Length: 117
Image (cartoon, rainbow, N blue to C red; front, side):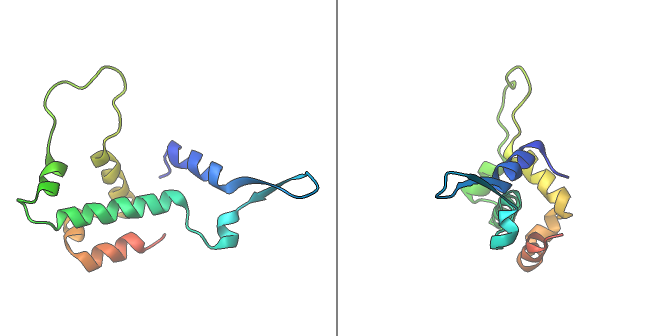
């Protein structure tokens, strides 16, 4: 599942413009494949899931874990609500078929996160 923001990032990343000395524009498509660089959306997803697993494995009284589980009280503002970090991580976990039990096991979590499919 590819989200609209990732499509815009991929488009911006894949179509770069380069000017040669004769003042002609030369479009370089698919620079990532040529350079062997991973997709930026994939790297962001891996980093979010790695941090999520790291925080889940912390002790229950750790302040970082408490901040992650904290629910803000009160009504949300009008209009379309902004996506929270927790919602994004949940979507990333579903895309990678990763659950909380897998995230608690560090080696299994790393394997599932790094596995590009």
